[in-house]
Image 1 (cartoon, helix red, strand yellow):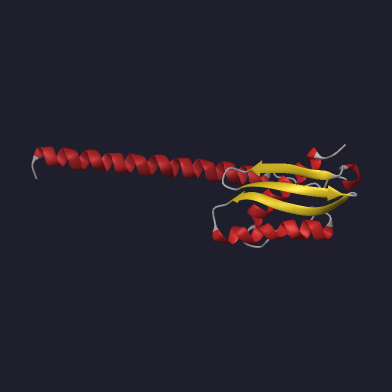
Image 2 (spheres, rainbow, N blue to C red; image 1 turned 135 degrees about the vertical axis):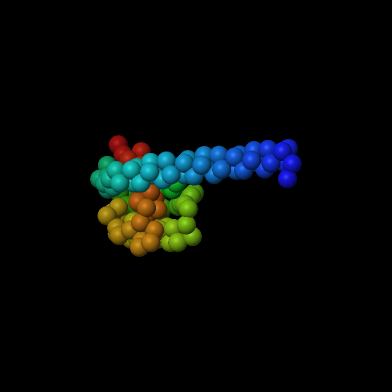
Length: 137
């Protein structure tokens, strides 16, 4: 190999290593921030007697998982939760969307998270909480 080819190979190799380190570092930082955000999530069911009738939007972004929902309340009851958007990193996280049905059935945010999709469940529940809070008197 001549010197020019060696320089090109070394330069390309350095760029590849730098790219891997940059993207790997970014992913590691985002993962740490995500886990910290999720560990701080507190789900509280707002008093439904204080939520006026209507449809309210709520969104929550935990960096690697986010959700946007519309919650419809009639006569102090949650009658519908529509998940407009749910971004997640794993296929199994789509199963977390069942928590929306549980919230309507049980009229509380104190429902079990879906096994294997716990973080997605929490993000959806937090988005529902935010929607309900936006409809409070």
